[in-house]
Length: 635
Image 1 (cartoon, rainbow, N blue to C red):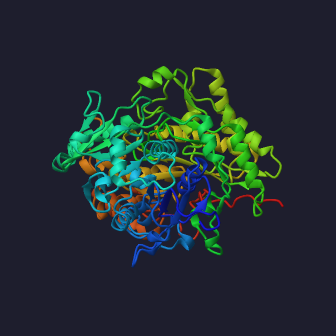
Image 2 (image 1 turned 180 degrees about the horizontal axis):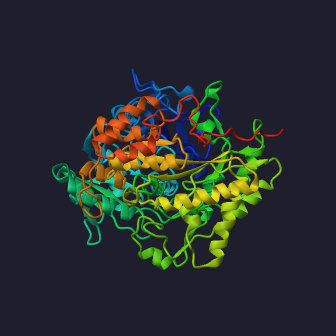
Image 3 (image 1 turned 135 degrees about the vertical axis):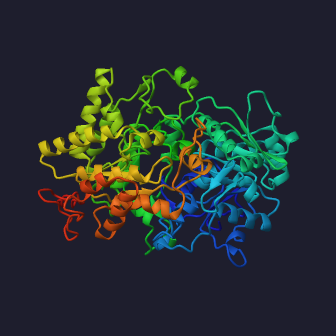
């Protein structure tokens, strides 16, 4: 501040993550946005929440508000596994340290700031606050919790991708309260009075019934109250359907939920960002480096995305267990080729770049540039997924723009190879499009992907083998995975490449039984996979799967869905992933006999109950599906 000649700042932003000045880190994006809008911003990464709170005091009172983000991930998912065990490291902290942030930083930081500066507004953002904007089930505390506004005492949530609402809030406060006076300050009272008159889109605010902006209107959606949902979990499930649908509509309605004597008001989101708007966000003058204070320290998440480029936001897959559409929406917001190439050129200028881009992707790798042909139809649509249960006939799923991006990037000086590290939706590649142009582009993309953009291993996510479970997950039939694997193997063979297909699977998803997992083990063994990329279902706020897991019913049908909830039930499902481990064999055989599936014993252990040798994992006449070393890169 002294170097810049500042006596005070307009916004102080607290983050639960280490500070990395990179467009993949939300704190950097919002900090750069505030700066670009002409305001003074200071950022405090990972403040010490013990003792005298000096990190919260050091920059003094901001003129406008404090801003808080728990970080790029939900703090509890970042800290604990599905079995509530501490993860090996915190990917967003220096050297992976676990002691750099508290549990629920959004709540802890807010309460400290309200104690120190009770008259200064606090605005929440980031994934933790965004997905806890209304009543939600908390897996870590095993209870339904109200909006995080109520738990924290903050004054507002900016949900989703926050550039547009943050800019609107800054200018609203400046125009209506500060009036260009450098000595003026925004107080909490003024903040609330203004927002009652001038609500900001894509924000959440808390009001008494009499103070709801515009009163309760005919087109508002009134959710069951928090207290009602605590008493009747089915009401929580029914609420979620409204929350998901309104998060994924072009013309959404306002949501209101009573909590005690107050009302949580979720103002409708902004329309999807235009190409110009998203380009601006990615074109801010990022250094693409961690702050110098971390010199000599490793930030694991940064190492993963250091040489990657995000092509778009949003995902129309609508997977039941995923929070992307709840946070980013289902409508794809794509960058221009010029913006993408500018970022790639910036990467090639980095001193430690060796010519290899780790990822040219997005939430799903192959959705760039895709949208509805007739936007009027999209404006009437409530479907959370554009490709489940079938690909929407209005979707223009043209892969040619993405092929053009790949070729343009690879043609740049300094680029030796660009890889696709994001997950690929193979159902988009295999769909029998009526438009021959789309079908041909999908085939070209598939070959281009396999022959030029796989670093030894290609990640895909079938998630399960049971079509019944896959339907609950909003994923395509496993038959499509067979089809894609045949294409992958044939293309690699024709191109003389030794590459692997790496599938991801989930156990203990709502509706999944031990018998489903046993059949998954037998089917993947038949395909010669020894699974590595597996995960036990983790209930996280604002997903269909979490609501089904907690309430016992599907939010859209309200029909019962059983779930594995106890640690023992979850373990009995998970062990089937590892049928090839000798230490699991006895328990698996015992479980197969208990569920009367002795037929699967012979399929998993054809040699009289003895699996392949643990020394090399080989079956007679077959090569194990183990990770291949990536091809040696020529200097």
